[in-house]
Picture 1 (cartoon, rainbow, N blue to C red):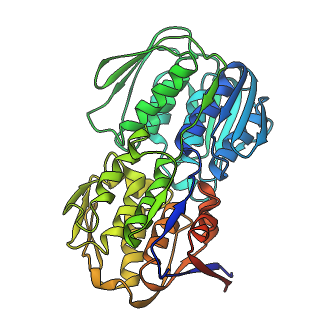
Picture 2: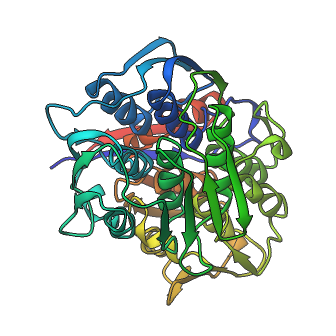
Length: 420
């Protein structure tokens, strides 16, 4: 089968100009679900229109919610507050947020729901969330521990307290939190252990919930009490995507340019914005970088590390193995395709050897993206400094940043696209 290929031509100038990153995927999918659970009409502005959010919108439509799109960055969602059992399984591609968030929300629906995805989604774990819902008396099954998930819902939980293992993903906690506000009594969520992937995303969830009228208390660092308020339709503005911004911050420091993204780094509420300070330290980024609280930014920083003045060890990134692909393996594979020995895996740590002399060389390398948007976009940065870097399946960026290649072109980055 032929695969689209996109080769970056390193620019001979610093990248300068203005680029507006798309809306946050994480916030858009939270807001879409909350609007679908709210009775009335909500207007979501600044939203991301991409594969992931399209799957969420289509799923809501399949369950009786009206989702209009009056312009490129707005969803207008009108709902009865009920997600009706659909006639067919809900297909969510490889959208982890949509899959996990809906799985919990539909457990409080009425009828039979099947949540499914593509071949990649069918490899992504959902067992901890399924087990937590089973403990609440929900008739739910995912035999493989991954989607598809079948739910026979009767509109309620049998208990008002659950313990969840969030070591693999904070999305399990967020999913339960958003669903719990639609229950009939105050609901307590407790963590099993202290580990939680990217705790900052919990804060995003709670902020969005409160905007739609939820009341949440946090009596301890590892527990939350959600009141049975339901949700109220509202107008909600979505900030730009901080993960997308990391590619532009990276392009800026790699080329010595100045790219105005329209939002100061300290104005973001998303955890990946923490990457700004690390990227700004280039080419003297820290020797050890803990990626646990900025997971989606790690591919960007790992590619930058190839040009750093000293090696970088990435720790706290085990969760990257269960993202859209095994991102630790994808990063080490891509970096070693550029130059053997550039990356090493030690357990779940990634060590990037770093070699500033790579800049200006011709090192023909085909980068397998593993259909992962973040692998494609991060390795494009290597192509800004090294000749003959070719991204395979470049259109996988449509998952979160459909205009990525056009935005780079607007900054003067030439690209050659072929099929072969």
